[in-house]
Image 1 (spheres, helix red, strand yellow):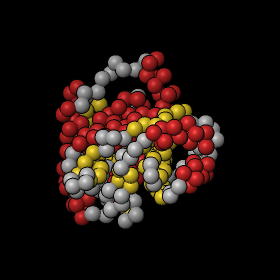
Image 2 (cartoon, rainbow, N blue to C red; image 1 turned 90 degrees about the vertical axis):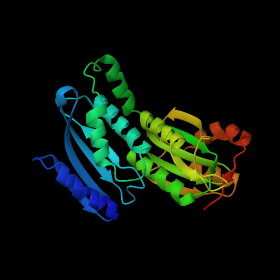
Image 3 (tube, rainbow, N blue to C red; image 1 turned 135 degrees about the vertical axis):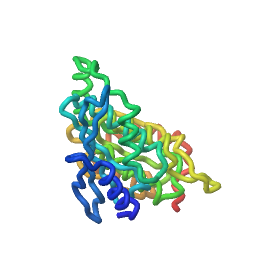
Image 4 (tube, one colour; image 1 turned 180 degrees about the vertical axis):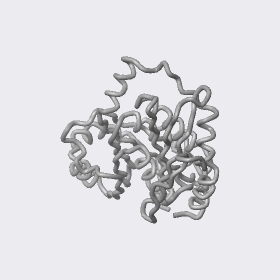
Amino acid sequence: MSEAALDEVSVLSSIYCAEGEFQLVRQSAQDGLLVQINSTVGRERSLNLTLLFHLHPGYPSCPPDISVSSTGLSRTQCHNIRQKLLDQAAALPPEPMVHQLVEWLQQDVEVTEDCRGAEEEVKESEREEKWTAVLSLDHIRSRNRYVGLLECWTQQLQLTGKLLLGRNILVILQGQRADIKEFCRLLRTVKVDVDSSGKKCKERMMKVLIETPSSSSCGHGLQSFAVKDYRSVAELAAAFQELHMTELYQQILPSLSDSHHTGYHGD
């Protein structure tokens, strides 16, 4: 747990000092810190929000996980606010950011009251469905940094996944479709790796090879986020077979044959 995170919690408890405004919910060396802040947003600050910030042990190098709840808003509205906060967190430098995020939410995010209705209900039902996606990455040079960010984002977005390192670099993801799309957006917009000259760079060459609703038998082996090195096509095929994703592998195989990746280089 970083000293910066502990210092930030001390500062936050001083800033949000009204009764019931701030609470340190949990603190552990393994899981980091869980901080709850009750805030008001919207026109005339009339909406009450409960914000939970999970500061992982790697924070602030890794953005916080955030959850949003409110008795005055629908689940979809809370999800939209959470996405805006996560977007903002991803765009900030790796420094203590919780106070900055709460201030930004209070000042710049307008919560619309007219987005309920049938269309929103459909979106909610879509979010309940689990999807599987396979992404192709161009290169990984800084393994520790890159893998650390991928693992952090899967936790943050409540996804399960597997990174397969070899001639082709593949990420198998499973979870709600909107969260998979957010993972892809982060990959393209955050500097996750270094280029051949050692400068930090974004993953602009990432491709989504397949994105499909998960079958009930698909992905039993995906419990959290794991990394596997493979040396041959047979080992890659076996990795998909272990996850009950052989059919998915057959579907992406033509894309793998056509691709020319820089590949995995290691640190």
